[in-house]
Amino acid sequence: MIRVINLLLVLAVIGLSVGLYDIKYRAETADRHARQLEGRIAKEEEAIRVLRAEWSYLNQPERLQELAKRYTELKPLTAAQIGTFEDVPMPHMADEFYVPQRQPLGGYAGVSASGSTIQ
Image 1: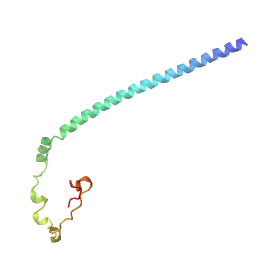
Image 2: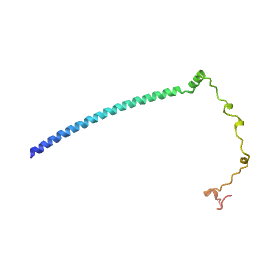
Image 3: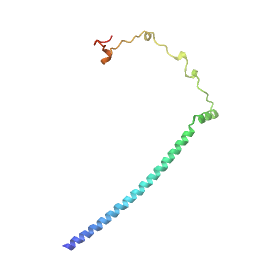
């Protein structure tokens, strides 16, 4: 009976050793993969910083203005291009005489010191 128990315990130790080795191997692989991803992320962040610096340089107003002068026939915008006073619609006569109705004040704002409402 004792030999059977000893044999089962030896088999259990061997099984646990194999399982522990497998877990250790998987953890090392996952750690290596995580370090590779971190390295790739760092490279991408550096590339983004470089691209933002290039974008900032390319969008400088002075540089764009010089390019526009050199390569296009663009001229500054004038007020006449937007519209004239004749284009603005005149208000209706009824709108000039409209007087809005007084709205009662709400809450404490509509109550005077004597307790009556303000008109």
